[in-house]
Image (cartoon, rainbow, N blue to C red; front, side, top):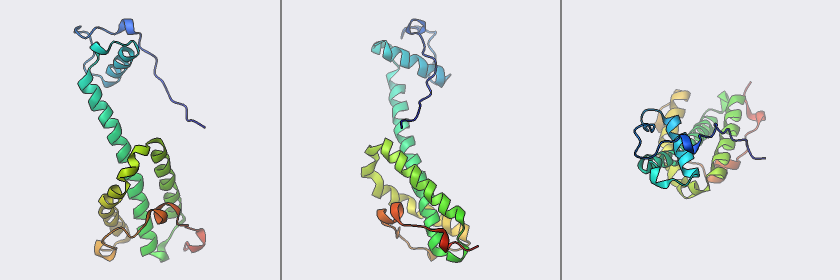
Length: 169
């Protein structure tokens, strides 16, 4: 089932000043209004009136945000798996819930952004030291007590079972 998308009220293209008009909203002054004006101009086919430099910047930012969201889910996932493996005596159900949640987030982001797939190995390698340091802090251990490189295959990260039977109560 496709998620509903909230859509703001459409700006009437007749209300959008021309490119030379001083009444146009400046990008840095009011991002929301600027976006609505740019959308109205695009829909009206008024390409000559578009703020192309700032549109390109915003599109680049959207791609970067998707990368960052995927990276964040993977970072949390790896951190919890490291804690799970390093301190079996301290396992809690919340670690399992977090692992499940991050796997779902990861899958959703990747499903919506398949162009990120070629970057996954680099992403995992880049964020592993951060996840290791975070896990070390949470476990009150030194980072050197964890593997120097990510010990998990993609199958481990995405499919390895975690069950409540191994949780210490």
